[in-house]
Image 1 (cartoon, helix red, strand yellow):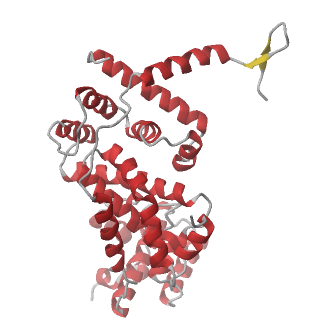
Image 2 (cartoon, each protein chain N blue to C red; image 1 turned 90 degrees about the vertical axis):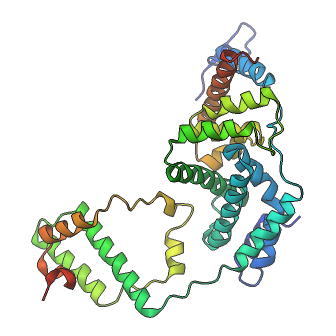
Image 3 (cartoon, rainbow over the protein chains, first blue to last red; image 1 turned 60 degrees about the vertical axis):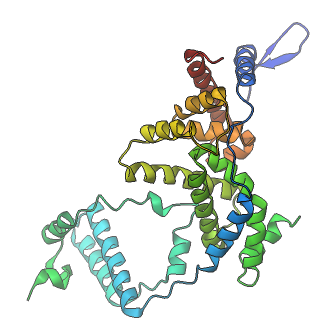
Length: 164
Length: 183
């Protein structure tokens, strides 16, 4: 609840009103001295051409068609990244956690991880996250491989790392 | 003028999306452009960011849940796109963001799409010294006349916090201009 200062006539003003008023007034005066316009201009007919160009660009946006093998490869990579990320943040410490890992692997193996890129678009909702905010460059391939070799049960190693 | 609710419904329907999107572009292109231009300074950069903003709106409109107003959502996308654009440009040119801004203001002296006088140029130099977020708040409020309530929705910050940021920005700009003897 806001506190008010009373004067003898019982009129009230918010606390610190006069201090803040002075600051706000000085600010207004300073603003009066600023240029009213930025000075920027645009090429002739720019907005008409921009509108046409934007609408033309959206015409070329079509649903992404991805071949099945490529989709499987991408899905597997995402799943692997999720598992590795999970393990980096939560190293396996107990039998229970180990069982969780097995469940995750089975989940991936049994193809329950079904999603398409429209659903991914929904997951990566603009209102919550921007793909530009995701930084992948901190993941060094060698470090990830070394981590997998050291920390994860060999039965979860990718076949390329198990060798023949 | 079409109601926002109807426009959103049309944008989210495959059958009416194209026409509704054209309406949206026609309605908001100028306001978004000036918001972006006052932040990135260069016309070609502003054009790129404006296009990126609308493409992002087009691609993500189905996931728009109406938790904020449509235009607020678009202004937020434009603000994010402008910041992202400048960061990427700085990385690409191997410059700090500060250096990029300094260069951009310097370029205004010969820019055919800048017709400001010496004082307006000095004003732009002063604005360029502000930290990114403060610069965004200042340019959106001063040049685009957003209300603090609108800015609060766009920036997801309290009105009080925005007012204080804006006042600090005004003080910094005044100091810069005074130091450089233009006022």
